[in-house]
Image (cartoon, rainbow, N blue to C red; front, side, top):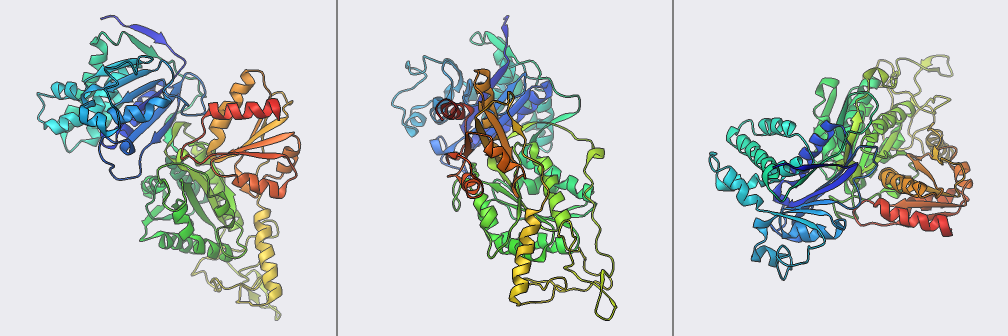
Amino acid sequence: MVNTVRQLDRVVIRFAGDSGDGMQLTGDRFTAETAKIGNDLSTLPNFPAEIRAPAGTLPGVSSFQIHFADSDILTPGDEPEVLVAMNPAALKANLGDLTAGGIIVVNSDEFTKRNLQKVGYEGNPLEDDSLSSYQVHSVALTSLTIAALAEFDVSKKDAARAKNMFALGLVSWMYSRSTDATEEFLGKKFASKPDIAAANVAALHAGWNYGETAESFAVRYEVPPATHEPGTYRNITGNQALAWGLAAAGVASELPVLLGAYPITPASDVLHELSRFKNLGVTTVQAEDEIAAAGAALGAAYGGALGITTSSGPGIALKSETMSLAVSLELPMIIVDVQRAGPSTGMPTKTEQADLLMAFYGRHGEAPMAIIAPKSPSDCYSMALEAARIAVHYRTPVMLLSDGYLANGSEPWKLPNSDDLPDLRVEYASGFNAVNDKGEPIFLPYLRDEETLARPWAIPGTPDLQHRIGGIEKADKTGDISYDPENHNYMVHTRAAKIAGVTVPDLVVDDPNDDAEVLALGWGSTWGPIGAACRSLRDRGLSIAQAHIQYLNPFPANLGEVLSRYRKVIVPEMNLGQLSLLLKAQFDADIEGYNQVRGLPFTSQELESVLEEVVKNG
C-alpha cells in the first residue's frame, strides 16, 4: 500500500509496559537509531525500584520517553504525543500525560478481563468510547510476534518476550528509523544464543512490515536531522559522561585513577562504565560497603592517585566521616553524589536535588568542601574534569552533585579532541622545603602555597619526606599533633579560606535584550526545563533572564552583583528551597523559591506558567 509521509519538526514518544516487557531496552534502541539520523534528542527513563513488582500492576509500570527534533532541544518533553502501551497498567498509568489527540499503540492481547481488573478498569477501554479523543492503534503485539516466530526454534515464552522488538519495529517504521544498529546490537547481545538473536531480529522485521502493510497505519512521519557543529557525535547518559570525564581527568593529570564504590541506584553505572578504562590507568574497586569505598579512595589519594568515590544520598551519609578526614588531611579527592529522592531509601529510581545542604554541612566540625554541579548529561563530562582541577590544584575533597535525571537521561555529545584536555598535571613534593632553627633542611607537610593555600602532596616512600597524618588536628606547617587553641583556630580558618579562594568562572546571564526584571536562577538538572520555559516566554514577547549556578561552593564572585540587577529572582528546585536558603543567607536580594519533590523533573510548561506569573505580576 502507499503511505503518506508527513514532515514533523519534533516528536515525543513514550514506551510503557510492565517491568519485564523490556521498555528501557526498547527506548534505548529507538534512541540509538534516532541519534544515527542526526536528530537532537533528550530522554527520560522512568522505572520502579523494586526488583519485580507484581506483573500487570500500576507499581510495576516502566517507561522510557524520548523527545527528538530537527533543532536544539533542552528537555525530554512534557507531554508525549505517542504512547506505546504494552498492557492496561501502562495505559492507565500514562494516559493522563498524553497530549490531546495523541497516538496510542496498544497491545490488545494483554487487555484481558483479569489484567483490566488488576488496575481497576471496569470495562475495556479499547471497546468503549473512553479513548475516542485519541488515535488508537489496537495491535495484537503478543500473538502477532508469536505467529511471526513460529518457524524459529524458540519456546512460545521466548517468542512472546520478543514483542517489544515487534513494537520497536512498528514504531521505527512509523517514524522512519533504521533498524540496522538494533540488529547488530541483538547479534552481539545474544551472541551465545543465536536462535534468540535471530528470533528478535525477525520480530523487529515483523513489526516494521506490519506498519508497512496494515491499513490502519496510513501515515508515517519524518523528522529531519538537526544542525550540529561539525564533528563526531554519540549519544551519552550523564553517568557515562561522568565516567568518561573522570577517566579523562586521569589522562589530563597524568595520575592513576582509583574509584572506590559500593553499588547504589542511580550511581552504579559510573562504576560499571569506569571499569572499562583499565587501559587509561583506571582501577575500580567494588568495596564491601560505602565506608570502605570512601576509605579506599582517600587511601589512593594519600598514595598519589586521583581518588574518587561515587554514591547516592544514603551512601554519601555513610561516607561523611571519611570526607571530614579528607578535609583535615587536605588531600585531593572527588566525591560524586548522584542524588535520588529521599530521605532514607526514599524512591531510589526517582530524581531529586535535596542533598545540597548535606553537601554543604553534612560533616562534623568545620569541614568546608568545594561543591560543583553539572547541568546536563553531557555537561557531566566537563564538570568531572572541573572536579579534578579543583581537587588536585587545591588539595581538597570536591563534591560533584549529579542526580537521577542527569544520570539516566541522554543527549547527543560531540566527542572532544584529546588535544584539548586541560593541563591538570601536578608535582608531588620531592624534597626538603624549609630549614629548622639550626639551618638544617627539613620537610614541612603543611607549608602552604601562597596562592592556593594547598599543602605539598608528598606520597609515601619519598625519601626524607616522612610526615604524620591522621584525623587529630595538625600543627601549622609541621603537621604534628596539636591541641593548641590558637593553632586550631588558625587551621580551621585557613581550610575555610582555601575553599573560599577556589577560582571559579563568573556566572553567565542569558538576558537577550538586557531589559529583564526577573531572573530565573537554577542549579543542576533544572537547566533544561528552566531554559525551555524561558525560550517559550521570550517567543511570546516577555522578557526574562536565566542563569545557572554550576559552582555552588564557592559561589561565583559576581553572583551578588548579578542578583542585585533584578527586581525578582525566582529559584526553581526539586527540593524545599535549599539553594534559596543559602542565597538568602548571603545576599540581599528578593529571592523566591519554586519547589517540588515529586521524584520527577519539572516540566517546561509548568515552569513557564510559574515564571509568566512572576514576570507579569511580580
